[in-house]
Length: 285
Image: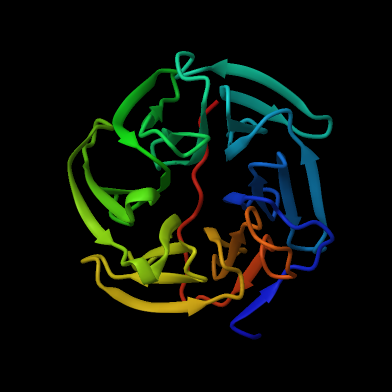
């Protein structure tokens, strides 16, 4: 297999994001925030299904009882497919109607970590939230222009989260009680690197990061040093997930928004990572 290949489909994403591997469905899910839509790639057949959404959708997390929790512009909601049904749960920012959810995923304890942002990308009004299995929503950090990630270290002691606009990836210490502390700048992108976007951690504890405006994905060692990079023809690379029964396949989203149309921007890619990933976590309930 080549280092990368485009998943053949008719629709290119305006803003592909929020990749999620579902072992139960043998499928990769991802969102097109601006369409807005939720996509599913069936790994067995290669078929892609696309569900239009009523408003911008930043991410989805599987539920243990079936269906998903989704991060909409208006907040958290339950999502069922076939037939499509959406039930609002909680709006963390009713006082900020210009904000939306951007990126999120569940940790090993079932907490959902997700960020909000100003849709116009003009104000530092974004925040990092933790949505707990009991339905409590807690603001954990604030002051973000464009939050991205999050990702969790293989050992469970660290949380990685980016402020894309500042070209920074932060690292937080994670407590056993679900708290975070000691935020520090872990990786700083240079202008030539573009901007850090979505990320994931592999089974060896290395952090993989998508480069918005940088046309590549990179793998960083636990100490933050660059291990290697893989170029892609998409200019705005957005998110990454490991997939497959052995978690040795990798899928990467991209965005076409703001660019002249090409066959590469907004496509979903499969790349060959050469390492295995970590399993996705579900939201209890």
